[in-house]
Length: 145
Image (cartoon, rainbow, N blue to C red):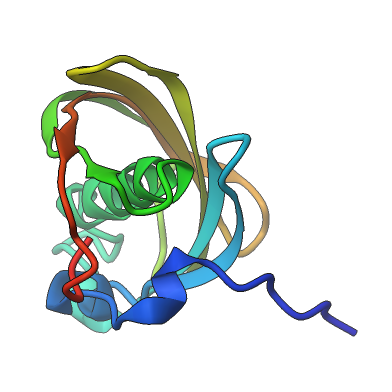
């Protein structure tokens, strides 16, 4: 039986439309450690002509994992728009369920470094990415992160 998820900053508002499209669902978060686990779902709307999930959607899943890791790590006091990222596609991704794990590597006053890994429903890593982000301070409790 699954354990109930610990309440988090994300319980205060709905995910933005882009996260909803990706099927974003918080599985776990450890703000002190700067880690997060997010579930995603890719259906037939996400596939390319080869029948696999288009890489841009995988990149969006990774981006929508690392950003919330930082937002949770700061308890909603900072968000960090991506200024650069490097992604490696390791395996083709078929439509279905995915789990992403993200973490804050280092956070400075103006720049943060994060990473995320994306796994398919068989537990195989399909993509991973590293990110550089611009740290923005301010009240984001208005329903967006």
